[in-house]
Image (cartoon, rainbow, N blue to C red):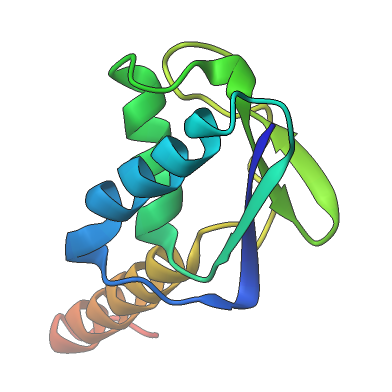
Length: 117
């Protein structure tokens, strides 16, 4: 099984290289003949997304990959790259920052309109 572990101290990968890195990791795993588990630790949301995209595009069978977060296995449940659950903190660093930007914009807009904050 290819195990992609999303971890705070995993390898940081540039988002612009995520697809290329995901393909290379899967190539190494598939060349092993799928006989051994292969674990790769990352701290990059984009790499998780790249693997899900490769499953959706048919380049990686969904039953050959799982994600791991905080010791829990998160299965890819179908050929569309969907996962069984999205645990709080799993590959959501960018979304958390975007959420904060939106909250600031809402607060500023209310302030500009004279509404109570």
